[in-house]
Amino acid sequence: MEKDPARVDTIKKDIQAYLRNLDHLALSDKLIGRVGSSRPLVAGMGSFFYLVLGLPLFVFEFLNNYLPFKIPGWLATKISKNKVFYGAISISAGTFTFLIFYSVQIWLLLRTFHDWRIVLAYGLLLPLSGFFAFYYYKRFTTLRGNWKVFSLFYKKTRLITALISKRQSVIKELEKGRRDFVLHTVDQMKQAVNNDPKV
Image (cartoon, rainbow, N blue to C red; front, side, top):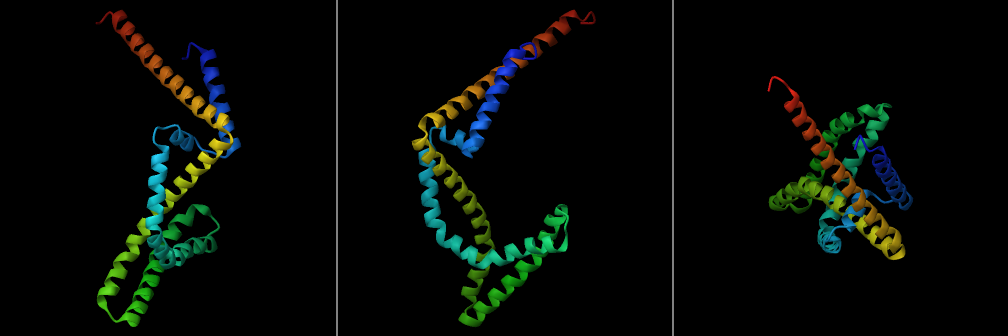
């Protein structure tokens, strides 16, 4: 490709045009790639049922973990003005806030029900629901992005179809350029070996 500047320039312009259209529609390449795959609707329906069935556990996690999750970030902004330290401060403060909140919640539950089995189940569910909520939210944002693309697809079918086609075309050209580069490099290495008097 280094010996074909016109080809490089064409690919560059295609990529820039593709990215401009994505930016204009507030979409990402990942979403377009997903819609252009063979199973976007199946994956979307699977995510929908996952979100519906997992909603009660997500609500449980939200009610029990929202404050201890938010407080460390708030403290980080108050303690330091340098964003570089936000992560370290949040992790340190989060260790204490989660321990304090979990201890108080478990104590209140024990005072209310007086049953160690309920308290044990609740204590085990607290951290597990936190991990579940993280993946639940990721699945939710993915599904929301899918529905956004699908709704745009029906409103602007030509543009979305053109984006999918352009994406596939750019990928093919890049892959072809990679293969040509590898072949060219191999040929040069063979020539160098053949011209080397020591061989």
